[in-house]
Image 1 (cartoon, one colour):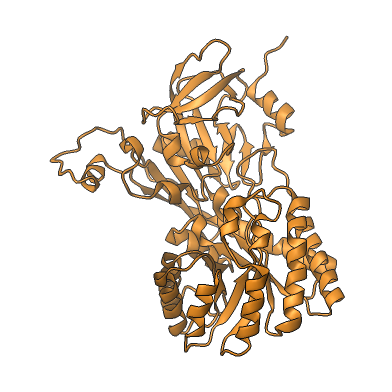
Image 2: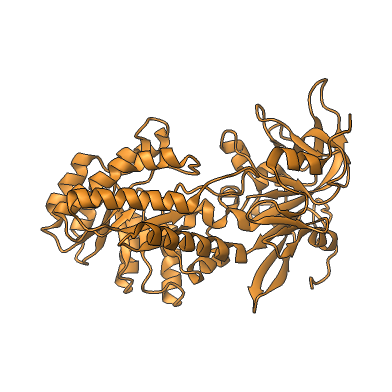
Length: 485
């Protein structure tokens, strides 16, 4: 029996040919793997070495433009009478170039803490946050968060929308002399079926929202937005829509009493494709079905349809970022267990979701040797001594990768959302694993422009920990690089 190759495995398991599109952000041509159909990862690995962090900002623009196009398609198909508002949930990735790329692509802004609002205020003052964009402020609001929102409003940003999370917050806004546009967040939808208990701490009960509605008409504020956040990375569209149906009814009932109400914010939850090669989600059909539900329900209650707001975090940024690692050592596994591919980096540092989120997956692909036979393996980081620094974690199935062992370069994809925010940027990481060299790719006149950022040096890490090294205490291999063409 002929031994299975990696190429035949991809064909049989994912129904993808070894040449052509592999996902909506990865493709393979002439034996080379490409990010965004433009960035040759084989060339980058050869030129800069590994480990290597690859950041491709044009992918963010494409994600936003594609979703807006799908929404336009759904609006045309359903004859939806409201508009569609794409908001970037900045907590997924706060880095300046990410946020500014999203804004330049037309995104609105969603915050979750005081620091987010201070970033928005900075962008507002620099003219990078256009005055027509909503700034939706979600989450529980400590005094610093409330103050940051107030300062941004005082600076003239009139589209700030604090989304009320509890009655104490409402009482704070009641005493504000500055008229505001406000939203309310529904608590029930976050854990309507008992499957998402972490979301149960957010938002207002039906009785609390009724209390606010009764009082807001007597204030100088306007209630403009209804927020219904189901969860994160929801790949079952039927479940997603079922959770939102009651929220649409609640919106309509509130709209009968509050004529200023105009936005229905279905929150985040839109899944990203960066975590599985067999990912499938019909985005335009989901949006069309949601618009149909809203339109039919609004007709029943005889209220105008709302403008539809989506908050896109993972979807916006997951696919613009990946890591390249090299297998430096192969160790045999226990009997009947997969072997170990030990890589020149740390998995739990670069992709902490694999430790924090049960059964979290990432797309892992070799750059070469697709015609080699496969072997069952798990990856392990060589730059920590932690037993948790492995991927995939049990009980997930091991990876099937080319049986070439040492020297094999792997692309670990879907790392652009939350991973850097969880592990931190520029700090002292687990086992003092340094951040790898970074290649940042932007676009100018339709052509990619490359910029290399050096690997984090050990001396700066030691200084963060309170040491004053006279020299680099631990030598780190830093591959030489040439300017990318």
